[in-house]
Amino acid sequence: MKLSFAPLEGIADYTFRNAHKRIFGGADDYYTPFIAANPSCSLKEKEKREVAPGLNPGISLVPQILANRAYAFVSTAQRLAALGYREVNLNLGCPSPAVTAHGRGAGLLRDQDRLDRFLWELFEELARAGREGAVPAVSVKTRSGFADRSETEGLVRILNRYPFSLVIVHPRLRTQLYAGSADWDSFAVFYGNCKKKPAYNGDIRSPEDAGRLMARFPGTEQIMIGRGAVANPALFRMLKGGRPPGTGEMSAFHDELLSARMAEIPLFEKAAGKMKELWFYWSGLFEEPEPYIRRIRKACTEEDYRAAVEALFGECTLKGDAG
Image (cartoon, rainbow, N blue to C red; front, side, top):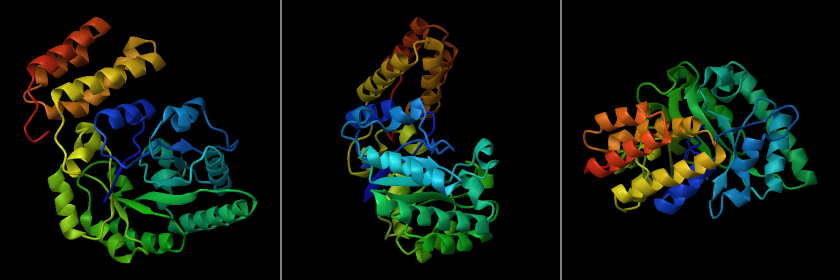
């Protein structure tokens, strides 16, 4: 089975990917946080770093594109093809109000007729571009609908009309954001009706979760994990029969990320802010970490922050079930 690291804005950047692959491994490929296709079809400096081959050594990387205009998507895909990428991913899943208000991400799911027209134009543009030069294959990551489970069957029919290389399904509605549980009954609609078996994404936090998924959907060939693999960076390794995370590994992972982010963001407060977001996830790995986590969150200086982290790693025990 193929295991993929989901695109997570603000978390799973190239510094995270490099450290994760080196220390824990297990993921077969990584998807970038979305690149927003814009009218000028240019890449921002941050986006250029995310997809720069030299900053992603030895990593199988799939850039994700956020777009609601076919020409902008295709032009961005062509730029990525010029960098050597052979696959890009269309974002139909981002539920952020700032994104969906402009009819992008999961906002495209609101009107299925409009989605169908957009996809028709997109693949027509890709066909034209392909006659002139290389274009990458296109996969898609989608939610199961916008506001109602009844939308799922229509969405599957639309996606089946187009030659996506892969359909990745996060079975939540856009209106759910990240609340509640992933809806396996909605995934069953994709599983039973997609031309190709879909990849699954959502609420896989342990090998037991993956086992239950495979028991119900035994033909699933790819699982994508995001928040679960941030909370337990060794999860992909464990799904392949490997060991849970160790304290030394977590300490090394933390230190490498902190150094990389301080190199990019010299102001300690901002770099620490990104690290404190990770501690929201990592706290579940440890037995009784609450007083240490409070100390980490309150730390305002680099000295205080490092002391708080050192205390946690030195005095807290990792849970036997890896959190």
